[in-house]
Structures are given as C-alpha cells and as structure tokens.
Length: 398
Image (cartoon, rainbow, N blue to C red):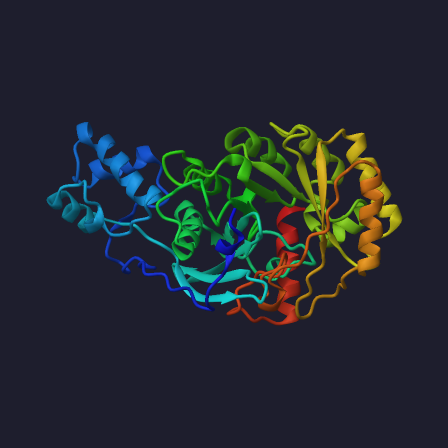
C-alpha cells in the first residue's frame, strides 16, 4: 500500500453527509437491516410490492454499502417517483459526530452521539494497514479495573445500525467510496471499543454480517477481530455464527490477580476460559487466538507470570499469540505501567517458548484514544460513584 495515502488531515473531519435522522419524523433507517429485511420494509411501507421488493433491495444495498450514498435523490438507476417515495419513508443514517480529534501520531478519535447518548470509535493508521476500533455498547457491562471504559455505567447496547454506522462514517471521512478492496486506508476492524461485544451478540452479528457482505462493504472475516473479556457461553456461537478472529482479554494467569483486574473471572475462571478457546471454531495455526495482556507494574509482569502464561497456552495446545500492551494510564487509576525493561524480559520469555509476543506500541495517548482509555468525555463522576458502579456490575454476575 502507498504509505502516503495514510496521511491524516485536520483536527476536524470535513464529512459532507447528514449525521442524524430528523427527530420523531417516523422514517425507518435502512442502515443495519439485513437485505431480506430491507425488502420487507419496502413492502411494509407500500413502496414496492412483493414481486419487485427483492430487486429494489439489491439496488438500495449497492447504493448504501458499495457507494456510500446517503441521499435517495442521488440513486440514479431508480425512477424519480420511487426515489421520492423512499425519501418519505426511509433514511440512510449516520451517527452524529460530537467531536473529532487527531493525535500527534495520526490516530483519530470520534465522539459520537445516537439517541442522545455518546460513545467513541478510533482509527489507527499504520504503514501497511488502517484499523478501526469499533464500540458495541454505550458504556460497558464489565468493570475491568485498569480500563477507563469499565468505570462507566452500561447505558444500553448499540444497535446494528449504530455499529455498522461507525464503519461507514469512518469510510466517509477517509473518502473510501465506492467500495474497493484495493488501496483501502481502512483495512481491518477490531471490536475492541467501548463495551463487551458478546453481551450484545445479536446486534454485533448483524452488523458484522453486513460489513462482510461481498456486495457491500466487503471486508473479509480474516480482517475482523472480536475481543471478549471471557463471556464463555457465547464464544462458540461467535465462532460458528460470525466466524471472525478471536481476541481474549486475559491480562493475568492466576485466579487471585485476574479476579481483581478482570472481575468477570469470578464467574468464568481461567480454566473454563481457556477450554472455550481450545474449542473455538476455526482456530488453527493460520488463525491464531490472540491473548491481550496489559502490563501492570508489580501486578502481573513477573518472570513467573510469563512462565505460567507459556505453560497455560501449551497445556491447552492453543494456536495463540500474545499481544503485550503497555498500560495506558488515566486520571485516578491505581495501577502503573511496567517498565520497558520488564516488558522486554516478559516478551523474551514467551518468545523463547516459540510463542509470538509482540509489544503493542501505544497509539493516541495524547487524545485518550489508546487501549483502555475510551470514555465519553462528557461523563465526570466521583470516586464513590465509580466504586458503586463496580459493585453493582460485579453483583450482576457473581
């Protein structure tokens, strides 16, 4: 890929498309609907009969997902009276952009709003790829102690339209319409933004099916990674019904430490989690499971921790790699980042066992866009409130 194409311009995105659906006008947003549901919506609105609805749905699908068009008036292969009828009944929506920031390293972060509630997404450009970090919830179901997002209360699940809308908004901003697999800036998607994707399974599945559709956004499932903190009962379904790459937020190798920093471990322990990883459909040496491991000073970064991580991966015969993530601090957090020397030593122990263990370079720290830092800037709450939220979340699953 031409690296010059990765240049990120400006602190505010000049995106000339509508961001919100007019409040209360009753129109249906076509974004996020499966193709068959688009056809059904056309019939229900009286815009097309059952005989022609499927053909009209194919036309709309191409305009919406292949060309990125948001105005029915521009859909030139549809007759004008039909376009006017579509305009009265439907909308092709996008999330509202509240703010758009650009880091000194080129990372972009958008604060988005839908239905009056805010969430974030991040685009990380690199020399050979561009990765979009997509949110699945407003707030988060979980309360991982090192994660800024985990301090937020869960407001609601994002809809399929809001999830796929993040991808489309990024492509608007990057000027990547019509769809083409060649020369793309946005090449990869990670479901690693705000929220736990497997606690919003149906909407995540519906959105990713649209993203992977060959007639639309056409992003290969090998270019998509879904991250979970360990919602064990949903992992097999994710492999069977979505089929994308799996990343697991492990972060510790003992019950004591993982109970503290990833409290979901009290419900689904390390052994249960790793057994689910071993059974994950499609996992092999060509499609390894990624274990995410945030490096916390004097908490989970000892030689013994690295050796135990190797032992666990080998004992479960997992096709795996380990992403070592230097901790990204945020105001009020009680953890520190491991030293570069300690991280290098930890990585070396894993490498010497024949397991890939790259150290992730922090991106977007200056705009709070790095791993574990996403949180709506509009939400400012007290420490007592944060503790209360954490206790409520934990009580819901133990």
